[in-house]
Image (tube, rainbow, N blue to C red; front, side, top):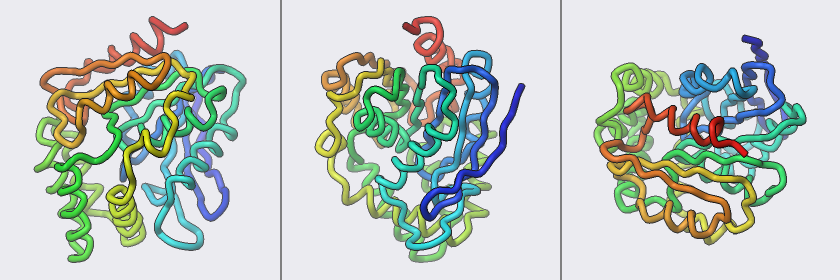
Length: 272
């Protein structure tokens, strides 16, 4: 497949990106907290025949670099990173944004702020705000940072909401936290602290502005998201459908790989 590797420089950031395929329609993947481009490998493999799949590391994550200023990357800066990537990879076709975990908030916010730019929206493990379990995890993560125990973050994730993921992804999470440098640990610390301060998504973003046909998919065993949130979003987003998957937690297709069929049904077979 055609592959483009590059680095996008904007503002105070350097953001690495990859483009896979040569289709006019784009699928841009928006990662969650501390998630790198690597988590999207199975998505690339599945959808590269139908889209140019675009991956990137958000500022403060993976191979990205913060050239100046604070380690704290604001929500506005994350939206600017996504906008810069959309501009950089423009091909003239339709745009699908696929968000995972925290990335769903960024993808949904972008689709609300620029409703004519996004035609299709896929939100995996979507929540409006951190629930009580997530708040306790974030507070424990902040304590681990203060102790300098970055590797303990992997144990925290696997203990609290990663118990059902496949062994290969489990090893990837452990390795990522084991090799976490201070810059990225500080960025993650600031991200956790910021999430605790933010209100509900629908209080800061007008979801009714989203024009994209939208698919929200959550796991019924996801302990860090209030499942009612996706039904609230369904009522607010004009063209929205939701899917609650039984016996699956926060990591969805990493726990049940065949869930990629659900994405394909929405993104390809029922595309309009």
